[in-house]
Length: 377
Ligand code: SF4
Image (tube, rainbow, N blue to C red; front, side, top):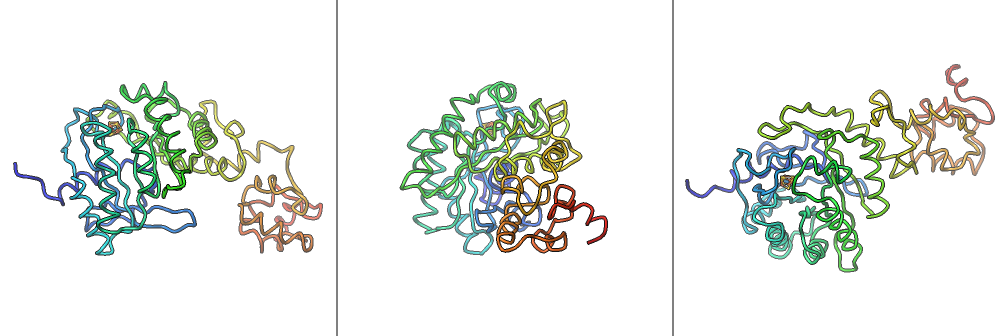
């Protein structure tokens, strides 16, 4: 068989990268059939969405993680880009206006250090030869060295290393080779230091959990994410609902519901933005979030002793816990009530788009906002 052409490599290595959501959503409307569907939106801080090519450098791997399509011994086409090939391909896509960012990950290849060197060389060429100054998200491989992580932070805009499971015990059931404290958490601590260095271009780092591949509960996953936010200044955790892959030990395991993934994102938002801690969230006996309701609404319903709160006096922290109120709404309410008290639900609705959802949890000038809701005010 002759050498594989670049299009075929992109088809294989783009498809291989589709499992990783750490830093990208897979909204189908952003996929592009003309280059093999491997373009994904990534939301940057500030809300800008860019189109990033998501691809592996190499899909060979000596590890055998049970959930992974790249695991050793699985019958799947294997290939790898050279740094020259991938950087040239990426530059041509940028020139055609097809992409404006890169998400580069990889299997372990021959060794983590050698493969990490090739990933770094790819980004070096993209930056230097092709003068690409746009967004690059670079995956850090378990086993990467501290100097490689420092260089990655100088070259890329975002780094990530995937935890996949919330504890060493869970991870050991999914991967015989990955060691959570050494391979992953130690690297995450180096990443956390590297992104704070003066020379760093990267300003944040992320991780991914696979949900439903093991017996882990949502409470355990959120507890792990919360510790990472606090101890490693993690920017964001991503949650990927498990999908069984043929030819892996978990091929008969059921697919995890997308609703579970959605509830985890809602709960994670409460941890990052609204001052919740994982043990406050309402979970079922299984430790999973209730599928049937928004976690913030369920929490408020479970705390009748705290509600209703007076919208004209409640502190910011408590207003943030009212279902239907977000950070922007709370800011508007606090500004408005400094000038004069909010008089009724109609006035509140001009500040709070979801005032009707919030009404059962509020008093307005001492009167239940719910009553005004009933009157259609
Ligand atoms: S190390 Fe990464 S690429 Fe290799 S089998 Fe595990 S998850 Fe897959």
